[in-house]
Length: 480
Image 1 (tube, rainbow, N blue to C red):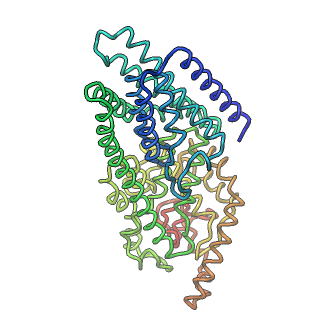
Image 2: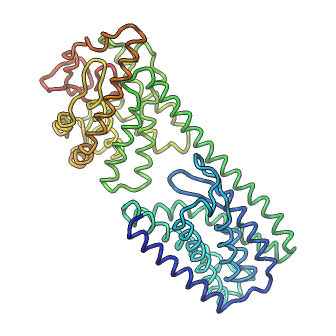
């Protein structure tokens, strides 16, 4: 943990302690039964938070805290919030149940302090606004909106500072993404908190418990949606792995392309949402190969024009596979156009220049780079220096000239990693050759057949040292 993070957590802890002291000095709790019951419900809500990759956890605990603030005041709200985060036991994949006894102390301190601060500030805003707008009702809309806005602001602000100190990302970009991503959920959960408070006023604590059941059912429905997305990606990963497993030379290609593309995007200070889009597009960019006949996909000899047209169809096939999946709408065009060229001679639509989304051009560079620096059955890998030279040479024709410089800066960091990848590829290829009793096949390919020009036709030669570098990802076909 860096000194910045340590100092930040110390500041947050100091503010939280100050908040507790202030509230304890100025507010009292009249009904401890409410605090106990709501504290238990808060623990349950925090325990069954929904984990969202890349975002964190989403729970309905704010509804419990908000309703407590309305029913019993700021001090009760803070206590309920602190109880929930302290004694929850959420289950985390690959880790198991997480609780205060197996969590690093600094994480526990930050989580509890964060909850105290967001609950305390929200409660104080509610008390202040309600004292001025009480005539609008027992739970007036101005106070309700102000409380939810305060929770959203304080919660995202505290998390953004932590993420900023941990990752070094741009503060405003991180904060805006977190803020926008939570607006709808905070509004929905906050309204549920108001309903719970109204139920208590009308029917007592028993009604609160009864309303908590549909609250948790809404959480269950949301979790099903998140799990559906995760299952879809897991299925796609399995399909991609199946495709890559057919040839040791393409094993791990999608993951490597994603790593390079994300690193370039981060160096360019793109928004987290753009980076996430690029990462998902890298995973899915070759999903269309599922629709390509294995005999064509794995053919070692020169392709006919008809076979090459089949290979060129895989971006469009990939687009058709994912176009009707709502949460992939920002990925499908990148998948379709990752073989377009800056000069308009790519496929399938011949887009050029500024018509190509920035995310697409980043993926194209990463895709081509991986094709050049990894071994293929028909040639050994190019050196990183040579591959980077080709990217520079093709700036403005194949690649977006505006991203070439930053791409070179990023990609040259991976030289040692690439050496390891090629050693692994060599081991796998030798094992496959031994199994098939064809150990000489992958070593007798004529490298000259790969001297393909910068156009999309991989069989027209030019005078470049590697010729065609567009990673049509017909990996073992020489379209690298």
